[in-house]
Picture 1 (tube, rainbow over the protein chains, first blue to last red):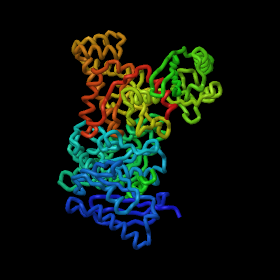
Picture 2 (tube, chains in turn purple, blue):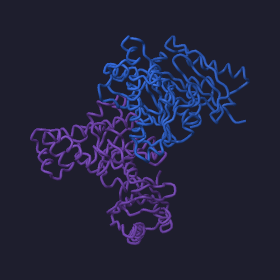
Picture 3 (tube, rainbow over the protein chains, first blue to last red):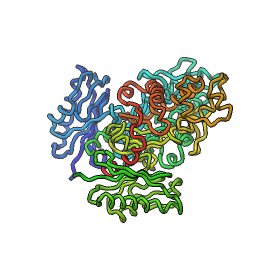
Length: 319
Length: 319
């Protein structure tokens, strides 16, 4: 029987774990709580204990596995297998993650940035269909991403490859970004960004759309509200949708001009708006891409959901 | 003695040839005229004859060489070693270039797109200093480019990777591009693009700058004129320079957010404007890049000039 892989997706509230076949198929999965107390010093021991427990209860040994792959927030040194500056884990100092895993479990251990790992998952068995050229973009609270080009995950010289959220796309009355500059894709295409746009266009809008009333009433407007109202034909929500599509479509056209990937895969919470979201972005993308690109680069919705992380993490073992 | 490489840079008016060491050093170089008569059917035989002649006159045999690399215009099938649609060579039908070379000379033959090959040259021994992550942008009549990421030349799914000239950057009163769409980088950052901008801003400008007079007089304005006048402080030329820098700086910031290359190398005829050009672009690039990118991606001028092609072509043999 061919050996299996362990995939770990480390997040600020939970750790997702899975045992996968070498095809990327999840054979079983479970999760544990992330305990960030005491500077996050329990996190790695907790994960190791959970794996060892699973080995015992399922009569598994390390001989059944090829290795362990993990996606983590923070700044990762993939060679050294260390993490630093993962603030949602309380990891402020350098964490020797690889060393701890390899000492305790005795399997080869690989680690990369969580957005990169999700990109690898979607590229491998998700919407990317294992094509060697796939860009993944995740629209959540922020905008993250990962680039796979000619079969390699692109880290870049300073490790910031795939930081798609900071592409400059808005040059109007641009919103400030957490990164310190203005007009980043994240300020107009994340969940927060869509709310930014709702406020901007509500200010300029004089009609009586429902979204206008919500904003003016000081209600908590979410990205989901905006998409739901736009689907229903709300005039202001459609203005927001159109501008969101414009920014994201231009960003995709830029990515495609540079890399001509087979797929630009859009995931994350905001992508729950589904085909409605995709069709708006697709239109702008096509208008701004020259024929050869338009015919070969396809925009797609992510298909793996929360499993992208453990699957991509597992793929690190096979690279 | 270690084997040498032959590098060929095929252009519409001349073919540049060189014998190189495996370090990328040019040992000798020469060129022949490109004879595009009879549907370009003399081109490959002429190059082969020139190489054979050189072998004879210098007492060389194929045993002295590792292989031959070539950069060509047109659409290249790098696997098959064929070229199609190279209109400046009169190559309208499929050309079996690799087959012709390998049959006649008996050395392994590799071919890629001319912009990609120039990118490889600059990446290897030029401004890219052999870093595995380098993007090359050539500002000439048009804007072309090539992307090297994680050590690989990025062709993308449809072979249009590195088509930097078609990044959408201008959303004002955008100029039409030869590709059929509007607002491409090429329409504002190539030699022709700079003239486009001179006309646009001359229309809006009411002062008495020299550039304004030249445009209004119907004189032939070149990109060089614009940069020369801008250096001298001509008011309109400075407006053009500032906007050129804005478009190119934004394009570079987009590239860097996606790939975080060690270098974005700017070459081509327009880059003769040198440090003056670079400083304007650098300013916009920094304003639009977040700290981690700003600190690790460097903009540089190309250093190999016309040699980039033969050097990059030679590097194909070593890939």
